[in-house]
Length: 328
Image 1 (cartoon, rainbow, N blue to C red):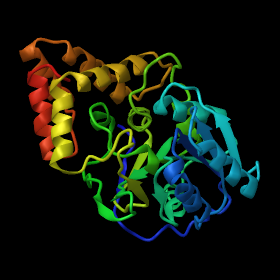
Image 2: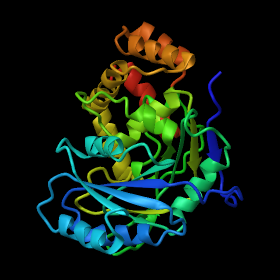
Image 3: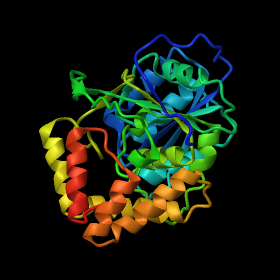
């Protein structure tokens, strides 16, 4: 039986003591000078103050490094650490930074360079995980959730989708439910993520983290309350999934083969890891791999057996069509 994954509705933060927990905030930068100050200021303004920032720059040619050094001078080198990125893209920048920051922290939080955290972002995330009362070194736990979408003028233009189905490995294999910029996780989760083999392509660090933690019987707390402003602008690497335009973009990616390629990348890395998937997750993974390469009738039977799902009715219909046309 897999560990129960939690979906939390809006509620008061747990009263448990969380003040002794240290958080490593991991921010990856690349030519992000336009909005970087706002993000750094929002981290500094957090109601929870026991944190350190690790900034990994992947070769910026604008003022990004100068801004980081300016804030480092203000905060001190023990509060803001600047690291040279690996030059392998945003996903590996985050994964490499997670390794380089060290294991001395109780929790780890990803941060994008162009967002803005609400003042209680860390306090709320930490409160949700702390309320689980688990051993952080043994039980992997991840907090993630929705975002408020804002434009370049800081005007709210909507919210990321609200997902109501429980997070699970059956969902994670075919869908990412939350941006890395919302994620906070514990030491046990970090230990699993750090097993990622260096020589494999990772499509997106957030999707990858969701796959790993759910597959290893971890606890996933999906929060419907947004705690960050997710900025939408022309230089976004990923962007939001809001509206029909985004849906059409996903459909196009599905039928032009990109989605199948992304899944194959995830499977390649997953199979190469010395990872202790739960018994149920291993069964799902093995049958998923077999189903993808099977002929039509066998493919339909196998996919029906393993019961993969997406979070919305629209997504589920698109998934079923993709199964028929061997696009998964």
